[in-house]
Image (cartoon, rainbow, N blue to C red; front, top):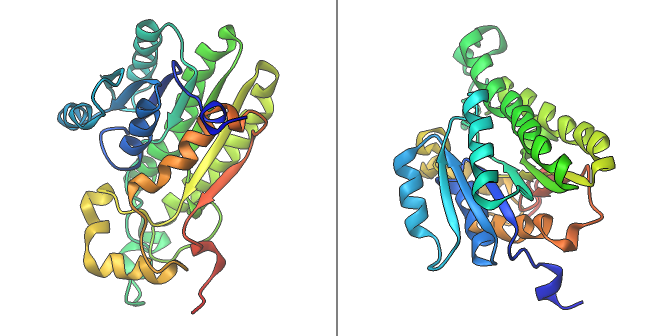
Length: 271
C-alpha cells in the first residue's frame, strides 16, 4: 500500500480534548490537514477561537467549549460533535493540567511543602479528576457513540510518568497517569469485541503551556533537556506523526498499547 492509503484519515470524524493549545492542538491540526473532520474541545473559549484561526485553510473543523471534569458537559459536547458529523470515529482524550512540583526541586533540594504528607485533598482530587476520572468519562462518551456504529479509535494521552517515578513532579500526577495507562489496557480488553481500538501516547518532556507556562522557564527546560538522550525538549508538532498513525488504517491491528515518545528519557542518561 502507498503511504497516502495507509495513513488516510480523510472524512474521519474526530474529537480532541484539550485542543486549544499544545499537544491537543497539534493533534487536531495534523488530523484536519489530512482531511479529517475535527471537533476541538476545550474549556478555554478564547483559546479555541485562536486555535480555529490557526488551522489550515479549508479544514473542516469546529469547536465545543466544555470542561472534561464536568461529565454532563463532556457528554453534551460528544453528542454535538456526533450530530454535526454524523458519527465519531476517533476520540483523543488529551486534556489535563500540570502535576505540580514534587518532593525535590530541579536543583535537587528537598521541598517539604510538596512531600506526600503535605499534599492536600484538594490537590489530589484535582489531579486525579483531570488525568484519570476525565479519561474514564471520555472513554465512556466515545464508546457510547462507537459501539452502535461498529467501531472506532480512542487514544489517550498518558505520560512517561505512567512508566517511571519522578521526584520533581507531584505524586498525584504519577498515580493518575499510571492509572490512566492501565485503564487504556482494560478498555481495550473490553471494547475489542466492538471493533473499538484503545491506545495511549506517553509523551516525555514536551514544551507546552501546561502548569501556567512553567515548561517555558529556561531552568526547567534545561533540566528536561538533560533527561533526554536527544538533549532537548520536544515541540508539540513532534506528536503529529504518532497521532496520525494511531488514528489511521496503518494502526488497525494495534490495541491496548502505550507508545512512548520521549527522546529516550526513560532509558536513562548517556553521553
